[in-house]
Length: 126
Image (cartoon, rainbow, N blue to C red; front, side, top):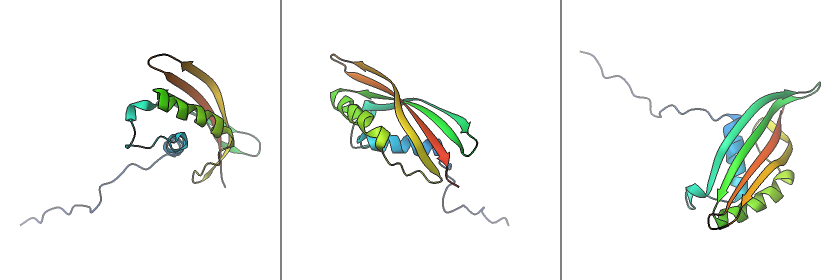
């Protein structure tokens, strides 16, 4: 008689990448909490990651485009832009060496919208 196959107590979850952790940190910095607030008011439109190195350091360069929709979300987006360059990130195994806003597209009117492209340089913390 065959015994039933043992099931693992916890299903396997995908491990979070550095890019995942960075996006989470950026979303947290916006001050828009999930799921309490509208999921449609903040979206990550694009996230590109590329390797970066100098003679003494190595890491990754991230270009992230966030979209804030609605007057309240746009106000949070404006605060985000002001706070980002000086924010102290906590990303395991990495230091954020530089964070800046590269591009902003702000549309006013009935459906106010703010699109922000941020560039972050993460160095491996060895």
